[in-house]
Length: 458
Figure 1: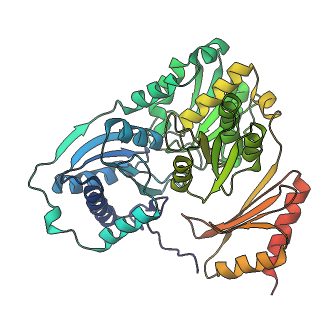
Figure 2 (figure 1 turned 45 degrees about the horizontal axis):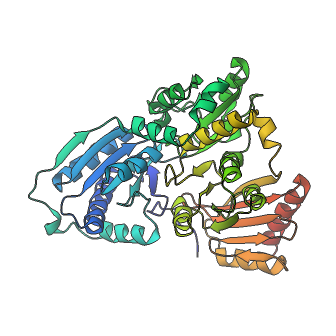
Figure 3 (figure 1 turned 120 degrees about the vertical axis):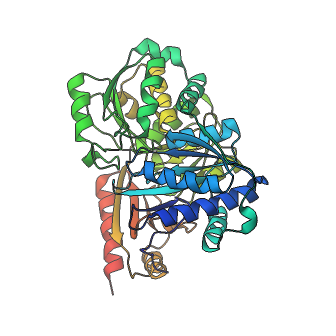
């Protein structure tokens, strides 16, 4: 059981370096495969497929390949061009499209791009559906897949406004407008640029933009980690902003900047959203993944609500949310999922919930987060080429006795003092990720060191 280094389609999509591990041929074959999947999934000979992209420069060329293939297959094509990932899923649901292809590599470096697939339920394809697409990819296009009907092609750039208007229906706009917030926002010159200006205008917020031209020329490394975000910290501080936000390129992850111009842990994006919703809706259910902070679980407990853990991967979180009628959930990487608005990680929904919470409580970010449970989270990653995951898990289970284990995705160890460790292979890189958390920094550092020494032992 070793981690492959060759890119492959999984629940996070397919990502590769453009013109190297992601080529015209690969894009064309996956487009054909997704068409066959969508045709069977929808029962329609000529399905309608939406195309959106996150703004990377290579996205335009990839889109041309996709459109050419879909035209040959007689597909009804809707070209949304630059669209945030959550906007794509919202639009599939609203307009009842049969599926969507998103051209994005999310937070991967700028030389990467990729494909993500959305089914006719406006959800990301999960493992079983991914396996179907892969089978179609591995087999030649069927002759009966070619249609006598001419393809239709429509360009529609109104989706972002529709998405923003939908969010506004479920948010206390008046409370936010009354606060007269000044907010600094880093849009990383990608898809958030097409929705933030309109959304913030409607919320009565003075927007202080950074990297707000959707040309795909990222202003910094695309993963929204503190070490990559010094520019927004400086802008928030010097502009006198009340707070700030940072999007990743496809705008499904959100990071918060406090009133002091400091980037805070991405775990707070979800925790603040959960605090807002559960404080008004007690005795509910939330779903978070195995690597998400215990902070969110503690908030649920405070409001008499149940917290369910899922495998890593947005599709798995959403699947458990829907089957358990969860009111809110998400992933600790800044991914807020609020099904009332959208069944996907949605940075615009996340920031709206946070603004509403701060406005209604008349608090700053710092004042608000001091009311939340406090944990110290640590994240690390190691190369895994040639290593056996089963042996790694076995070593840790043998060493850490009398702990609760969860093996639905890698190995999670829960300790009696609410500390935990979670080890799993990445879906998108040839690495193994180690997450952990404790109520004090000393404890989590000690647990990490103990885990590493255990794995290094002969």
